[in-house]
Length: 307
Image (cartoon, rainbow, N blue to C red; front, side, top):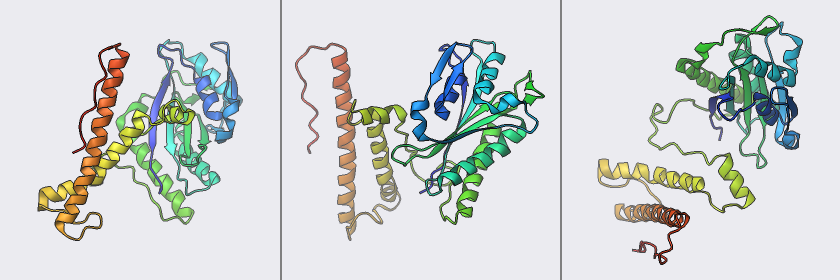
């Protein structure tokens, strides 16, 4: 099933001295030298996960805009503040139902229309994860428009407006659906929130890169983020049936039970299991915090939730 995602964020130096050259090297799977910090950022070893990466710029741009190293070093050199905002990043989910070429072209067409034609320079990088379940695109976009052979002296502050982000989210949904239709696929995406779409469901949190990496390396077998995702899924499973009980006094459809009491028994068993997992997770976290606090008291027996 095609999923929707457009996330926008700012890459800035902040207090950690973050480099946009390093960010570009990582997203493109390349080796780039950062002139400002005098450091080489080598991410060429992860190039297998980068399907394609290309810089796009307005017509008539200077020659250095084609070269990622020169482009992002020029951005770095032009920003003097220690907490300068260096680039805007967009992270887009692309449908796995499309080919890699179709995924990349959909993102490029959107970047040209929404970013490049409005004066910005954008580097589009298509990533495929090892398991193939999460194809996505990173777009690094300049904060300033090109003005002749250099960047404008003034940043485009209107890009920070919420209305701009709302428009970008809607336009990306339209671009994805157009690509799916062109490919002869029936799947469609929707940029609206669950609430706006009239769907009574809690948004499922993302497991995240860090937790996934820890599980893959064997640092933890089951991360807290994974447990949270399972818990939210269990809540979403029972949510419509709880509404049935509240509105009708019984469950309309659930499991294989034929009578209202059979359905209710199955429903309550699911609720009991979800509650049991939540209580055990909370208890284990409590014991973990006490251990980190050097509590040398006798071991505590877990809560009795067998009944």
